[in-house]
Length: 255
Image 1 (cartoon, rainbow, N blue to C red):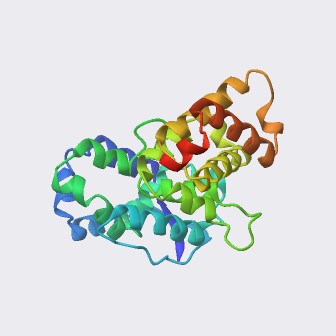
Image 2 (image 1 turned 45 degrees about the vertical axis):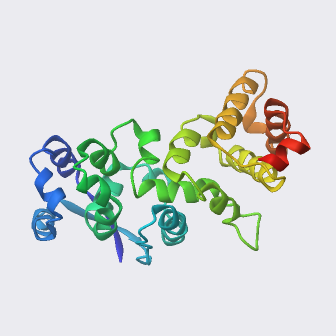
């Protein structure tokens, strides 16, 4: 099938009049959405072909999110990065070709009538960069894109699996809000350092991600981080985390 997105006029209508359409979201009124988007000019088709992925609809989001990062990125790995930043595309996909997934993933927010979280998951409400990792579809692609390790022939998703094993939503927003984690080399280096520490017996928590980006922010004032290799980033971050958290052998065992 071909990739589609909504027109700018349609996007603004959905956002500006979101309260007027609220009952349609709460009821999951598929017929209404079909009729709405069937109007001429509301959905625009690109020449980009893709295979619709088989997604997980597990009751446990921690299971489905991890699986779906792979599924979405595998299906759309050929997507140009410039297009992958477009709200109109992700909004269009969430409302049309991936609508079943949308209502599955927003089920709890719909049940609780959490209007704010629901629309933050469907539209870009926090600025482009942050929104890419809040939107329920775009974050799957972007986490896949940023964590895919092409140097690992056996399993290029090994760091993806590590990153998505727990606290997926929170980790995505916290970790990728940093300017430095826009660089895939730096991202891979940080994750490799964290993975190594985990392999030594430390339970990786939010503060480890925060410290890694905080350290690189300070380091960025003294050197050009974009010139570092993956291995150099890994070594620097690992050393800092060990020093910061005083990860002695005993503490590693207890963790």
